[in-house]
Image (cartoon, rainbow, N blue to C red):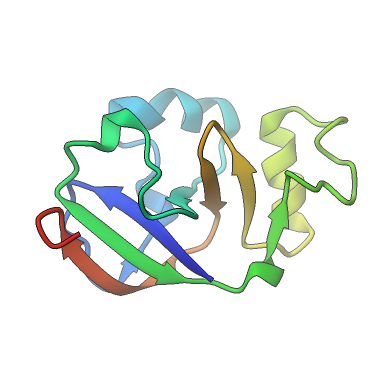
Length: 124
């Protein structure tokens, strides 16, 4: 499945979770969870307002089977874990990320993913 990442950074090769927490928006979230991650959208057009000024759109491809779907939550783990523990637990189960919904259909990846295509906003 294709996933979409908006950024002002001009990445090459991969989108890497290790950069999570370096900007003001993600700094507090990274401190509270301890899990480095990169966020993507499932819908190319659906993005949060603070990404309206992003210069680049990155398109990557991942296997849906390697993502834990929190919307379905077949293992019912979201009911019993804090967010910090939830990401750690899902990662220990062998998933590379989660599918969720924060008002937008989103994916949170714990692993670097290869960029298939980079577009500027004027091309997007």
